[in-house]
Length: 511
Image (cartoon, rainbow, N blue to C red; front, side, top):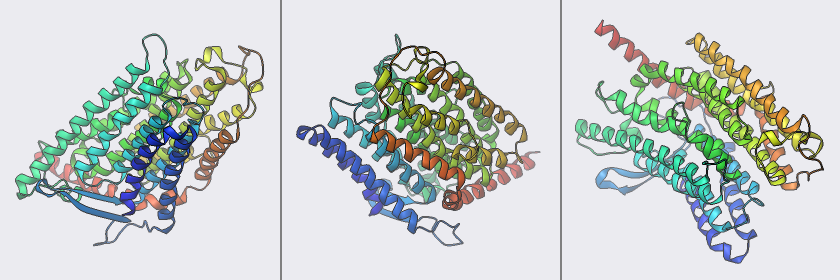
């Protein structure tokens, strides 16, 4: 029942925050913080006690598993399971969820209870996505994240330039993700009915559908239904249109959740569902997926260099970093897939740090326009130094977690796709360019305004120090993270290699 409580507690905590609003402004904040710390602590306890080795024949790959009947007539059940990958991402959700509560402590001043209801329901839905193995339940949690995030952006977001309102940004986010989610629903239903035609049994179980024989003519289309849904959320160019506006208009907590957690649900979906359910179609689609990853790396970096809004710049860097993750997922290399997991965690820490710092700057100077910043290095104590550290992490300096992830991805992908690695390496050069642009425009150069500004308080210090410590810890000693994901990456590579072999045999037969 631990898995069920990991999902239920955020939903109950959100309802309690909503009702506690009548008792004062601080009580909902403390309830929300305690809720996410509960998720984090339980995850760390499970991590400390878990065995994540690659299972031998007949052994279950899951650290924990829980199932109960839900709608037996349609083969739908509540099936939750946790392995190394889902454990890391649930722990990440708990940690960044606590940071999202802390960074909103002074930023959110109205409808505080309802704000934390939406925030915790987003996080509860994310935990459900990481634990659900029944495909109907997975889709339910996937869609459940959308409405609270819409309200988070629409009600507490910031208005941007003319025509770029928070309502428009929230609506665009909702339409993109809802439309792509419906494609995934169609693919799920088609897969279920194909299994029903083969066996006469209705089932939405992941383990049952994993062995379904899908006709070769249909499998690529079903795989694309899953891929497009995940590509929109990752996001992959050209499905990225919602991301910059959503980040720019969202409150700081919304940006932290979007960049640190919601984007990772897409990479998780590819590793858990798209590749294992359709290994042969995924192997055939791999060159296209890696090409899209390259486009995202270059496109995101180039557009980041031309941004004037600091949050939009950070948002475009996320597109570039997720391009590396997409290349790794479809490389068929265990080293690259483990590097993708490391980069997912590293990007969550570095981007969350940059978004929180941009929120702290906004609280002090009331603008995100870098054209009217400048000279802040000598006007604000400590915050520019933290910005420099997270900018260095974002561009992949050695001894940071981003460097480890990117190095493993490029090193693991090179044997199978050297040209892809050479082109992707240009993204590292452009990362240095947009990182230096951010530091120069915000913290150096002539001061646009005079006068000293307040330094960070204990809450802001604590958040920055915790994020920086984790970036350096994973950068210097990533082995615990790699050991935890070894079993998962091994299973994905086995399935992908089997699909590639089947594809080669079928091509040989055609010839």
